[in-house]
Image (cartoon, rainbow, N blue to C red; front, side):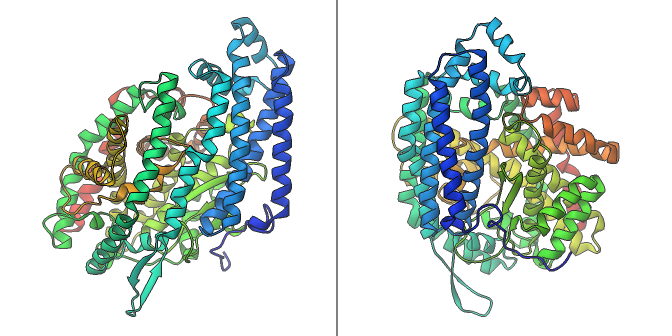
Length: 590
């Protein structure tokens, strides 16, 4: 590959960023289509009317996803882009209007007799999206009246979603002080400071973590207000719908049963014993009795290696090629066409994501690349997301609506390919140790960090149902969750993690945590089959990905893996795979 840019190309989608005239025209088309949908929705229901509404609904979905994704990219690359926030508000207003109108559409579906329903599903263009329409029909029977649901969506723009936007403002205003390698004081954004927390020198890392905690403590009162309002809105709505559990919505969105969730966490809790020797050995290597929070994801001594972006992308493509030429070719195209924003510069939001631009049939990946093994894993992870969308681009828009947990399966599967390839290709003990350490850090994240988030959020919702929860109480809940999830293996904890983590403030997806662990373990099972079957598995993998928008996770596993996810056996096998990695880690560090 030639010299690569670390900055993505957004102008090929809509030239001019937040000042784009093309984007304004697209928003006009979106609002016009929603107006057409409203006119049709108010007509009497018939097979023809519902078929026409479904076709128009999918057209609007594409426009909404495209403009939302593009604007999300603008806000992520520059948290101070006020025009982008104004456009985002316009899109959310349009989305709320459309979602309100969908309640009328859903009511039409729910009112159909079984005979009428089967007649509708026999029509061309609807058979391929039956699963999604059936979901909508069933959910409509559990919601409020269409008028009330529409009102909820309208009020949510300035209420519910507005609170989520305030959190982005808080992150954008948060500034962190840190000494550079030449001893100069620098002012860093949250994204830049987050990368510093992986510093190999423990004294510097400890000072960075202290600064991280200090700044989030300063923001804690505002963050507590935001998280209380977001959760309060949800709980009130659930109460009106007579939904008793805060997990009902996220489980429905993930198309998985509570029995599957319980089986997964039970296996994870049992499997944490495999990680205890790893924690104990790493503490010895760091020179402490117990690891602090900032030690968990830190590299070990000289094993830290800075990998240039160009080398990282080339390596990822080479590893993908071992599994699937198609996956490798797609990733190389995404890299060379500048679909990736990886530049380490001020003003960016922290974290990473992959977002779909369905009208353009493209994706964009956002991250801040600083050359660590963790950065390479993140890049592979996001390319896995992008490939997932790529193989579904020719399906009807409704059939592309896959849930977050299976989305995380594709991304984590890509990570596994790259980490396994890197370990096999490693030369020397130090390099092997660095790669193995990164792999174990990810297992720790999915078994312990994500579990701590789940425990915190579950208990927070229980407490929030009785009233507002203070910043001090949120700190306490977080510390208790971290102690339990990490089996008491940590010394200094991260009490303000709830304030620093964007996932708690997302209004589109509640409980943005357990799907990650599901994806990690589900992909481990898939990867084991891929290793066993060799290159021939690539086509089966694509077939699985293409079905992710058209069935529950339990059905998906039965069809493509012949596994029962509601039983502990599958999860126990997946969790236990970490034992071999821990054994190798212990042997390498003797």
